[in-house]
Length: 207
View 1 (cartoon, rainbow, N blue to C red):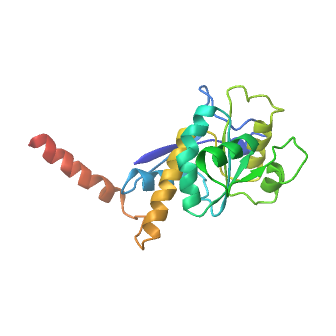
View 2: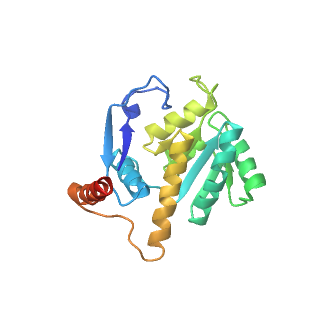
View 3: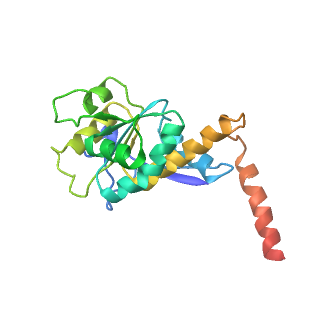
């Protein structure tokens, strides 16, 4: 089973849609699956997340998180996604990951195209992965403008590196199964997911 929080950033106009230690979710969604990847994607979809179809923007501030996302960005390319990235992230992905297909885009306050804001407003991005620096909390920052535009345009937004990695791993699991003709989604009752595990646990405890 997997449980994910639900936030109401779309209703909070001009708020920065990034997570802090004092934030409280407006609800939670729990889903079952045959494995953690299926359960997690089901929970994310139930919480309003739309699976990306083609174009994904990656903008990572901290150097450590850039290194963490590298192998998973390659997974996205292998799955056929087109990666867009802001300047420093694009340079890192190309130099360290050999991802020459990555397309660099300009940040919101740079009045040049291709620009992140334009792509979001015209619906050309299916997912935004933006892991901000700890200092990137000012309302006038490029990061804020990017995150806010994603929410206002209804584009799925991930601001936590661990959540982003798990989403990519789950998409990769789904892609690898479906590309070989195997089913990824399972549809069973709550009892069918839980009772086999309870039976195994009972046998193990009585042995």
